[in-house]
Length: 75
Image (cartoon, rainbow, N blue to C red):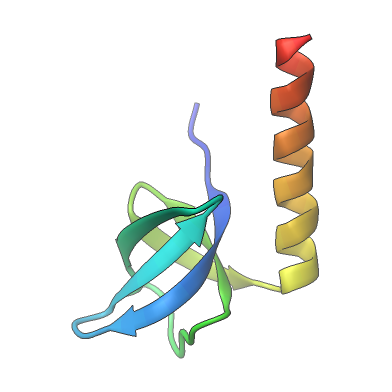
């Protein structure tokens, strides 16, 4: 099973790369598959590659559902 998750771009780097964050974890990813990435954008991340942009509301909803699912596994 593969999982792609929304992450927020914190910095655009040279050579189609960007820094992203998820729950305080920073990672450098490739943005070669999408155009016009800017800090503050949310992108769908899969195996180190941004696949597409996602609107912030949808990203937050998805992250909340993932968090909720993780919490239900603990109970």
